[in-house]
Length: 415
Image 1 (tube, one colour):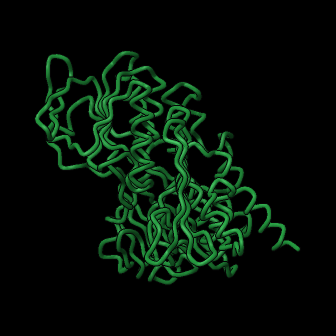
Image 2 (tube, helix red, strand yellow; image 1 turned 90 degrees about the vertical axis):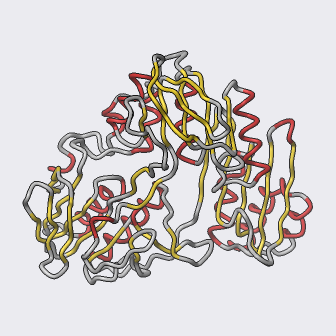
Image 3 (tube, helix red, strand yellow; image 1 turned 135 degrees about the vertical axis):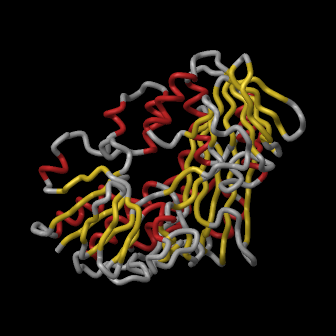
């Protein structure tokens, strides 16, 4: 049996290891396309602030890890997949034959329609090469303009802040992290960042970037201009599916899969940021681009590739941020749904906010700012669909009692 995995991020690596664990004899080929050992993009912010060096981003520290597991690591780009001949065409002109194929190609940054994105000093923060370029320009006191204050943009913002640069964040939405937080929470994050000396411009677009004698000049939608030594683009990501055109593999926002993470073509599976899989919160198939979900997908897909029937029961939408010491999180249907009940508590002066969403007596979504002690409990109650019983009404008036509700319902269900 020949197993081929396209993509050497966390999903690809975990899938390869899982395949080897359950199949000692088959060949396993892992394809990466950055000329680096497999690494974690989530480690790049730590590289920027010098908490780790480049090897610290590598997913496995031993240089012999893949050889020891008899996993062949190929550095190339996959140009096309041909299910009829069961081959993957590579950009070096060669091809690889497979019996089972896993698509774990992840996602790539979205480029907003702004003139000047190709200028020196304008970078994404998505690869090790990106991080190196940012480190060269993000010197203490330099003026940096991040485009986008979503989840990824906010992670990059935290690292840039710790580097001691001057920051002007430009976000087209009406608040920070608009796909993760409501207006109250998103604007609370904005207020917190501004209290730390970060300029945050919401409801604003960048209309152009040009070169100047100071480096770069950024033009805003309201007509103002700002000089910058560095512009970091974090305007979202999209699944890497273009190479699948003509393959017959169904795609939408990502690769469409069934409840075993198999694509529309028999023997081809998908995992991670490229896949449109079951969202536990909504019952719909969505792209959930977070590393824990990618790893979960990888294990399940690999089990099915070796013939171990393992259904995917859905992944939970979740995000946790540390913004200069302020922890925020959202889980499940944090925005609620039609017919749901909502409860919230707000302590604006102390940057504390908790909002719960209920369907019947089940917690289906939550968001919090400054309540780091409740993160695991919120996730657990939503992911398990626990019936809260009398605790639903208690939480409607006193959302902060979530820990009591968690312990009480956990004990009841265990007995």
